[in-house]
Image (cartoon, rainbow, N blue to C red):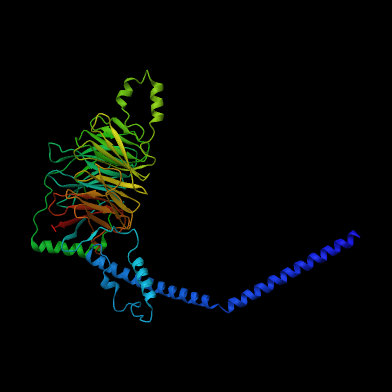
Length: 515
């Protein structure tokens, strides 16, 4: 009996399942029939979607054409140019010729055009477009001799104009700004030379004290003696025209890495600065010339006595400094205390340091790090302090003091920020760019020279809030990443220098006129 009931239950369940599947099949068939015969409101919706898709495709093509025109204008003028309404509303615009579109379609088109015209986050709203009549920048000459990329460049401020360049080829070269020839070569490092800085002026105008930072975990202080007769003889008008033609015609053959014939070769340093556990990325002299600071990938910044070569302070985020002189006096009695202090005083930043800079007249130091912050170290008071600047969202590649109470920082987040030392809570100006920023510099006229990864060099005027770009003529610009910029405001022929991975230093002449 139980077997019959079991068979009956299986039969009933199968019939129910079969009926359910049949109902589902009928429902799906009905749904497919409804899809094939679209409802009136769905048909209207499909038409609107198709119309929007066509409009977006057309606007995309128009945006590509406008971008091409913008690039052409930028190459001609060598400036940042905004799209004018005349270009956007040309007579051959495929959108403007469609008179059959309704009022709603026109409104949608204008909104999409506005959204696609200027990409968000590329330019600061307050920037003014600079015309060619108010500022002119031109290529002057190239300095060739390094066999690898050039990380850093700086100019002297003495009576004899000298340029120094630090390269990955493990050398530092000194150049005559007047003649363009290599005057001295330093070969004391066994790693990439990442930074160079001129020391204080000496009584002898032909002697130059320099400090270099290297990937060999050291910084060197060395001296070069330069002959006094490095002036370029006056050129006639014919010679000047011939030199200009040679620069124009031979610009495409610039390769870098030529033979260096320096009149002075320095192989050993006067003072070797040790103490870092990783590559030293930057070095800078204090304003008094008695001390200097180094920034390293070991996340620390050391302050050295320039004469003795000893570490005076180690800048730290938890404690302001560690005085080695005081510790050494009590080293035998307080070994345990010293060991504990070394554990507590760990790192000045959460990541590697990229750059450091000293105030030209006050006891202020800034250090930039890959942890997206930079710190201001204040030595002016008896109780020293440190301030952390947070505003960037990527590695801070450089930070420098400008004339007055301002700081300028550059970052891999494609922006530079201007900060007021009297109100350090947030940046007062943010300039958004189209590529990562490397080691920038500020002139005595408050013009920021911004080197970028996309081979461009931008100039941002802090006074007039204007942004422009150096020209990129064929053979007279950088072909690879631009690593650093430096100003020489006192030189009559050229006042701006740039260097990069293309193994060359380029000199520029900028002309600023009052509005």
